[in-house]
Length: 563
Image (cartoon, rainbow, N blue to C red; front, side):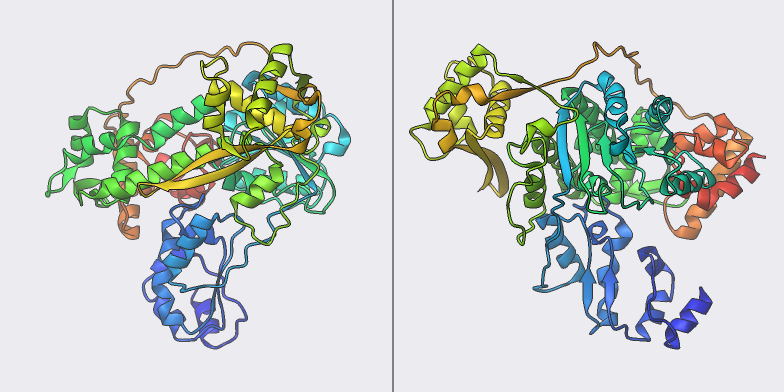
């Protein structure tokens, strides 16, 4: 590090690459300011924004250091920033009236497909899709480490497939990457949360076996397909059950503000041991840890390196409420994308505000060309559905454009067709070209309310138009049998010499970094490590909550302590 700094100061470097965390190192920003750079380029700039899909707090501090490096020009680059995130990036970096270059989101060689597939039918569907050699190499995203292992095992019966997730040691991950890039592995099954270091131009298919949490993350993941420009396919499998799964994890990871209030009320101006506060809260360890971390992030709690807690500001509800609302909205937008009634690629282009785009349909997605679908099955509308289509068409004849809510009320005043069935029918009509459905919004009480509106097309006026409508069917492999697992309050593993030794070491590491101990790893992870007693990096990685970064930073020290 010293050698690089000396070369920088002596003008021997053309480029200096740094992580934002480096700006926390004492004296480093001052060293940078001694030599004026000709350009400051910030990559992955969406990480600056609290509204970005991969927010990192250290990115947000970059703007504080820019005045000392001026008048060097600043460019911020990202592949996944919505207009909201773009504005936040500019504000945080202090860029006044910056020039914006928002373009290149369109990838017309990727045929996007959103298929209604039951959760227990998805593995068989993946096998079916990838059985054709021209659909490989492929990346398949699964929601958990366990599911990546199971699906990779199932796929390996037909062709060479391997799992790729944060629970693998670095040697194994590197081996899988090399074999995938060298063509010896045809399919990688990866967790959605795990960043792929794989850049292969000829990936023909990207499949999601669960609904992503945001459109930003989804777009980044499908962008790994077809970088050579040849025709490729991106298939997203989803059903109503995905919503319930997401809601469960959302309530766990972003608890209601009242849960944070419950902890805040127990805090005083004097520091109290974390274990004491938790025992008084009577909350399960995991729930308490999540609530405390949110309080700390939003200023409601002050936590020292030894996990002693005192009361912070009482305005934490404002910023936490905004963050929670935004996270919920991101998933709602992902659901809205799945239910959109227009070209899939065009919907993505609009979402990211690509004003330079042609706004033309792609012609290859499942909306533009239903016959191209690999996972979605369609059927002709039933007599009852055709009758409802005729009612909708008739209701549209006397208006240029009408909101879907009003159209539903006008066409079915007595609730003969529920809203969900009505929207599904409208989407099918839009796919057949009988209507055009557009997104719109308005401001109310300082909030943006989004809605959809529909207009009749010339094709919708043609005789027998309703007979052209096809309805997507949900593919199901029968009922899913699940063991219902009650979430019992997890208690601490108790005091043991080993636990206390690791806890003391964790406090020392936290002190060095000036962060609370739970930022090294949580008590839940601490107890899991003590219970499992791993003797190798591979065994350490197998523990839930332990990832490659933790092992890379602390694996050696932890294993020595365990021995």
